[in-house]
Image (cartoon, rainbow, N blue to C red):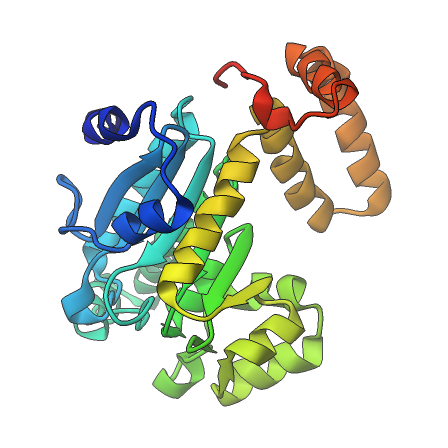
Length: 310
């Protein structure tokens, strides 16, 4: 499905070396959701970079029931797409996302079916696990995911960005773990991933228990984001530059690095070392190693080499 979506975009840009600002401007002015999706606009600003834009600007990119399933479909396809090497995620309109679409989700989650408490509880758990997969699929995708946040990033938006690999934001961005304000504990990733992203349990506890807003400067100093940009256009250009740097490297090396970083985060140092040794006993036999070594000997960037699709 995505191959059809991308064909015209690839043809349009093929052979062109457009400035990052120019491409970023086009990335930020999508005409609408990309069929069959109703909440996502998918484009390919360069041959190996995929742009996934949350696209319900009239609803502040609130996450309705369609969004939760479309993200899974989209990222499962990107995981298997050999053409795609990096994904950039952003939001259309005035802000990144207002979080869960409460009115839409109320009928889906808050009115469970079942003959008794046990069966109702099992049904609720199944629904929560399905929602969790919407963001876990980002983490499971072997292609690095760069997320670009402008304006508000509320509730489930924080769950989403913590599953991404590189986080960028604009100076006007702010983040809020909103769930306690609506009477629940965050259950689709924030409480599990945010402590490992920020590294300060005290700060995570404060944000999650008070639902206070965190602004761009604090997000940068705490490690939630790695860069802050003046505005959305500059941020999208920066996101594209980072994506191009990644896409120009060996996909064997890049995807192996992401997989091992996530494994190491969740395991001991000893387990991580054993895992990478097992991983590289086969991956070191790639032709990409010789190509990259040749570039280094020639004092050139690895981007000057052509690497086969993976």
